Amino acid sequence: MAFIKMTAAQVARKVIENQKLFILDVRNRDAYEDWKIEGHNFDYLNVPYFDLLDGVEEILAKLPTDRDVLVVCAKEGSSLMIAEMISEEGRDVFYLEGGMDSWSSYLEPIKVGNLTGGGELYQFVRLGKGCLSYMVISEGEAAIVDAVRFTDVFINFAKEKNVEIKYVFDTHLHADHISGGRQLAQATGAAYYLPPKDAEEVVFDYTPLEDGLIVKIGASQIEVDALYSPGHTIGSTSFIVDRKYLLTGDILFIDSIGRPDLAGLAEDWVGDLRKTLYRRYRELTEDLIVLPAHFMIIDELNEDGTVAKSLGDLFLENHGLNIHDEDEFRHIVTDNLPPQPNSYQQIRQVNMGKINPSNDEQTEMEIGPNRCAVR
Amino acid sequence: MTLKADVKLDAKGLVCPMPIIKTKKAMIDVNEGQILEVQATDKGSIADLKAWAESMGHQYIGSTEEDGVLHHYIRKSGDDIGLEKNFKNTIANEEIIDRAVNGGIILDVREEAEYAFGHIAGSLSIPIGELEERLEELDREKEIYVICRTGTRSDLAARKLSEKGFKKVFNVLPGISYWHGDLSKKI
Image 1 (cartoon, each protein chain N blue to C red):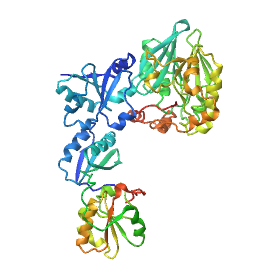
Image 2: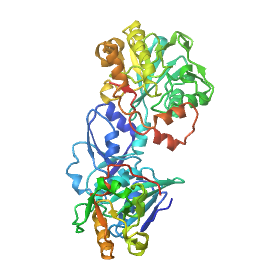
Image 3: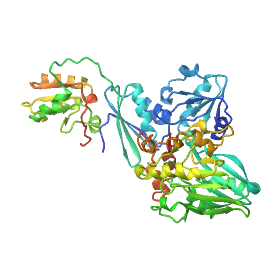
Image 4: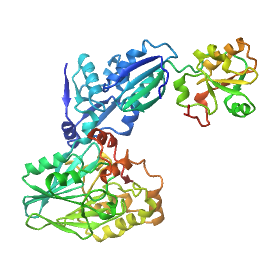
C-alpha cells in the first residue's frame, strides 16, 4: 500500500470545508499538547515516533479505514518513516509535507467581500498560527495590513490580481509572530507605516501611523481610516476600510480581547484597553464587520473559513466587551493571564529590527500557538 | 565543559528521526549504569531524547550546548528505585546538611555528568567506579554521608567503605532524586 504526501494547503482545505481527517501526530507529548493542527472534524492519536521504532502493529487497530489518515511530525522526517511503516502493514496513509513547520507558515487567502467601485478585501488566514493578514485592493493598487513574514505570498497574490502594493501597515508592534511589513515594503517600494508610540526603539525608517490618517486606495473612494485604539500596546491602531470593515489588530478578537502585558506594562495599559473597548469602539456604527489580526480557536472561523463578525454581534456575545465592573475588568486582563507566546521578547526585538535571525531561527521562534488574547 | 562518558555517539548533522534511531542502536552496547553521550545538532533532539529516555527507563541527565553542538548525557537503566538496600546505617536527606556542618563529608558517588547537572553544594564527587582507588581522599575520622540518585549505588559504596575499615559511614536516603533543597551546577 502507498504512503502519499499531503501538503499544508490540502490540510487547510480540509479545515475550511469541515472535512474529516484522522491525524496521527508522532511528535512528543509536550509538543502535541502545546500545539496541534485543529479542525472541526479532525480526530487525533498522539504516539511519539520513538515509541514506534520497533513497529506500528500496536496502533494499527486504532487507525480508521473510513477516512484519510495523516501522519504529522515537526519537520517531516519522522512522519515519513512512520507512514512508510504503516504502508508496509498494508494500509494507505498520508504524511504532512514539511511537517508542523510548513503548517505554521501556510497562508490561505480568502475573500471577505467586495468594496465600493469594484474593490476587494482579502483575509490571509494562517491556520497553523492563528494569524490574520489583510489585503485591500482597488483599481490597480493594494494596501496590506499586518503582513506575516512570508512576503512572497502577498507579492505573488498582488501579481495575480495585477495590483501594485502601495501601502503596508502594521496595527502595532507584534509580539507573537514576526512581521513581514518592513521586508514587504522594501521589496515593493511601498510605504511602511507603524504607530510611532510602538516604534520608539525601532532601528529602521518608517512612516508614522497617526490617528485620523486617511489613505485612499486606487483612484476612487476606497478609504482606509486609522483610529488610535491603544491597550494591547500603547500604539495599537485600528483601521476602518470603506466605512464597512473594522480591522482591530490585537485589540478585539471574535471570542476574546487583547492582552495588555506583552511589553511588560499591563498595569499601565489596562486603562487604555478599557477606554478603547468600552468607549472608542462604542462610538462606531455596529454594522462594521470586525476583522481581527488573530483567531485563537477553530470555532472562531466562519463557514467560508473567514474570521469576521459584526461589531454589534460582538457587543452582545464577546465576554470581554461585557465586563461592566472596571475592577473586575482590570483583574481579568492583568491577573491569571495565559502563558506568554513562545519567544515573545525575541520576536519583539526582531520586529524592531534589533536582531536579524536566520530563516530557520525565525521558524523556531514562531513555533507554537499564538497567545495574544484574554478570554 | 567536557564530561566523562563511557560511550560517545556522533549524531551531528542528522535530522529527526535519525538521532533517536542512532541512540537506540548505540544504547545496546552500553552497560547498565554507564553514561552515553550523544552529540547532535538537531534542536528537536532535546525534547525527544528526554522523552524517549524516560519512556525506556533510562535516566536523561541533561544537555549542554557548545558551538551549536548539543551534548546529551543519558545513563542506561538509570531507574533503579526500589532495589534492595543492605547497609544498615542510614540517614535521611533532611539531616545531612546540619550534620555536615560539624565536620562531616557529603560523598556523592554518582557519575561525573550527573554531579555536574545538579549536586549539593560542598559535596565531594567520587563516582562509584573510582571509589576504591580514591579512598585516600577521604578522612577516616569524619562522618561520611554517601549519597546517589536513589540510594542504591550509595548503599553499595557505603558497604565498600565499611569493608575498607571506615567506621562512621551513612547511606543517605532517599537520595538526590528526592532532594528538596537547592542543587548546584558549579564544578
